Amino acid sequence: MLIAITREVSRSVIHCELTHLARSPIDVTRARAQHEQYRDALRSLGLEVVSLPEQPTLPDSVFVEDAAIVLDEVALLTRPGADSRKPEVDSIARTLEAYRPLLRVEAPATLDGGDVLVAGRKIFVGQTLRTNASALEQMANLLKPFDYEVIGVPVTECLHLKSGVTRVAENLLLINPVWVEKKYFCGFEFIETDPSEPFAANALLIGDALVYPSAFEATRTRLEAAARPLVTVDADELSKAEGGVTCCSLVFSVQE
Image (cartoon, rainbow, N blue to C red; front, side):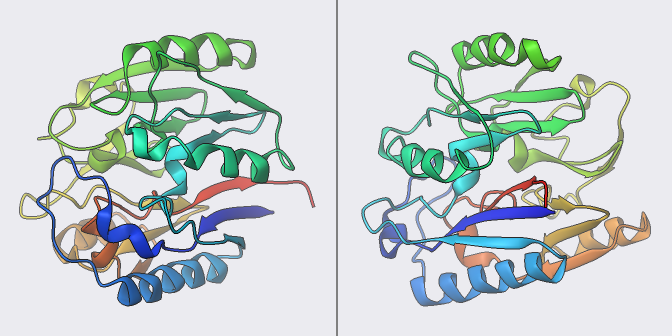
């Protein structure tokens, strides 16, 4: 059985952290409606959705992906690169401890889950303004007993690694090659985002299906041509907070 951990959109999301985008007004009511549509999409794919309560003083807390990386064996708690986001982790830890043993990176590491792309036994880690070299080193040491290979990927043009590349099938990546270089992903095939849609590389793989933003029509056509089944959602409000469809859930399997 697959579970998705999600959290209600904070009323303070209008004060979210921004790195690569200019601030635009966020309609909180509309963001919440779109987030519920997103959760409905997950339910339609057979997931059990856990909805954690709003954290009014934590603007970015809807983006639960950044607080942890959940693997089959363990959950690795992060240490977000933005100081305002560090308090998000403890609440996620209390939720995840029912499902996995917990590990944690420590200072001086900074690590956002949005910088972590898991592909089998390979874990690609974006080196960004939010995730540093100490995080890469600590992850490699913490996960070595579980036989994971941790691979650093330099990222400078976007917020997170998964802003520029996500997995859309077992051996297939959706990538914006302007933001992330292909050379780090040996052995993978690629679908490139349409040049007119630089933010279109973020897709959420659930089984054989993809949860994908409805706004990126040109890139969606490329995915459909590759026979990728899609469930589209409206996600433009939270995109103003530099959020994508992977950001809003932690998806993992549990024994029934």
